Length: 473
Image (cartoon, rainbow, N blue to C red):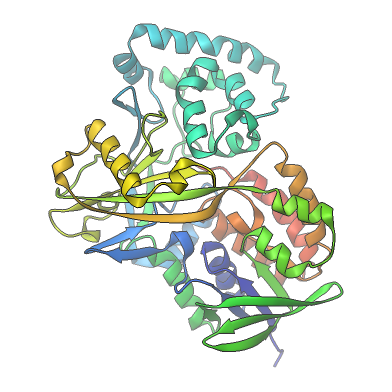
């Protein structure tokens, strides 16, 4: 019998579990997944509260990546619900179809503002004809393609709420988030001449019947069924490296110190944490780069309402700064069985920096502001609120500042000085992506490893592969 190679995976979010699932399925690897939290799944998990099954914000299973939708169905089987996607954007006190339509905009904004928006496309249209890509920031990217009036009405305030300082954001975040290629395409779609496609707007998505957390739970169970191990409530003490190879990971697990030998180490934990564990040298360039990576903290405020259902949409975007949240999501829009009869829960989500007032605000203050916004928007009445819950997550969203690509080059070069280390996931690679992309990364890594591709080459190939990822709301 050929002995299996030992793989230790750091982090049991979707990225780590996906890598563990595909590597276990290959039957060539002995897999151990390490997770510091009491349960697997990370922010793609679900939890129970006051009779509800709640997700950590809005999640869906949808992908443009060939074959990944089939993998979702293969893993989850008949437990998947296929739902028509319904989401809109709230502007000027009105709900607008998203993607935007000219007829809807004209009725809400009036002819003067619509003319200003349309006139603002002209410079973008003229510049687009020359097809020069000399953009230097998120702001530059959007203005050149959509015009400044639309940028200032929608894109700038929403980007500021979500990421902070659009003029200091790298254009790569816009390329991943915004599918339209330019002003002409937008005008044609607004007029209904050019239709949205599955590449720019999802008509439906899949959702697990028992809550989104059923997806990582199923990955966890499949790994165990195939002989892999998931160690939760586990602290990484140190990583033992001999010259260019990691030999073992030392962890605290159930009041014991365990040494986990590894032929390969796959990491989905934050790059600064990994860097401090693997590299203890005085490489100031590397440590400056890894500590210079910027993140945004996530805040989720769940408002519990005495009403069977509130929204007509699964989620709604809120670009304007007068409201604290940038998106709201109603759990029972996914499956009415996920909450008690006669009651519903609205999740208000927003991000902030470490020094943002939202992060230092009390839970009461955050809930009060969220309730105020929902009432002023006409979604609920204050006397319908029966309670709230606040969740905070540090360093959840990578923030692409103007120097992030240079920092990543320095970091990746250092990572490749270790011959058996592979990165994956949103936080592990510092790559803004969704659950489908993390699943694809796990599949990509397992395929390359089973074909005996060197880990350094796998990382190079993966860095190039993830550039093709697009996020479709």
